[in-house]
Length: 581
Image (cartoon, rainbow, N blue to C red; front, side, top):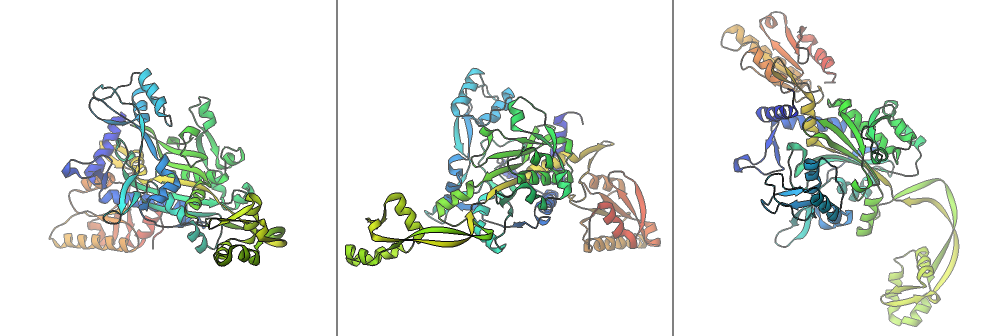
């Protein structure tokens, strides 16, 4: 394969022919932006997901996992800002009626990056460069922004308005207090979630790269922003600090630089490339993760978003991109420094306490001014209403009453203003054991379907005109294939089949993911498992029933060796680099 189209076509052909994925609702003509996953696709997705959990969750004692609803009430996305800001620029062909996402259209037609512009700026480019509909050459309508949230009704009849979540993040933010409590009130704290999301994309194309429903693997990582880099190092292993990343910074992009520089995680921190060391940490973990799923590091880079390109909640964002043959650089993950934006917004809209109590090493003494209601004066002035007033005033701490009186000169209760004359004032020395802070947040977020595509493309090889999928063993749908050399009713054939079945079940019980195939010639069976990425194939033959040895064939080298059944599990585990029962 030489051209990018041939490579893409080979991936899509393999995916459909062998059951990795295909378009949804095909018997009804299909719907753009939706894909179904066959037996091998489900297994490959699960292996990638499991490896992500291993890297990002199970290898970090500061990260836990949750699961939250896909459907959320409107207030959640009103608070998060999505209802206002989760939009994309669109235009319509006035001749054929096709809808286009403007920035993608300009990149496709003109080869220019035009993300984050205003409708007026898009219109200017379209007019000045005479951009037309690429299908019918029709005129384009004035660009506008459209909301990408899927609306739904919660409850029958006229229920309350809800949205399908476009990200997992808000489920973690609204549960911050619950998770903080059950993890014994410690920071840093990562809350992870793997789940389905939905975005009403304008013109979903490019196969798995732009979908209306897909899976996101995400962490909201909460931390104290005053923690210095030296204290953070206790959470960083030496190999993560030395992990090398190809990074194109916003500063370099603004200077016209297009090639990334190589930094270690340590250099990203020490050179101030990242606004928080935690961003560099998770970028390092993400770099290692992509390498472990078979992505060549030379085909990956981190590109920092320009201010106009960043989401409304982000102070700094790096996209992790992979070079593909047909579509060039595509984003597979984003690393956003969300600061306090989300927690502050949910505090504002819910009045919930989403803070962290930061305890001091030693208590501090502080003089606190307090205001106390003068019951007799309030009763004298307001008569029977005084009890209602006292109930309302008791809802606030004396220090809060004092601050409100100092600021406004009065406190309003049930429409009446109580001035300072209705209060007595005291100064008290209190021991302060800590302070409430709103944690900052860094978010690593991965698109699972995009990873599935780049894994297939990066690992698809052609050998002697046959497809070979060189998947790393830890994400291969199956570790091992088991073949009986022959089948049939002859006694020796039955013995071979019985032994092959025994080998298969012994390996399954030991924890290997196995596939059994007894159809066709051995050569064809090798070819079938090679193209779905099975690393090792075992053949049970006539010699096997005599000396309890089998042939083990390596997918990548095609070399074969005889292994005794007593040594088989250990041998396979060593070859695969995995641990089994």
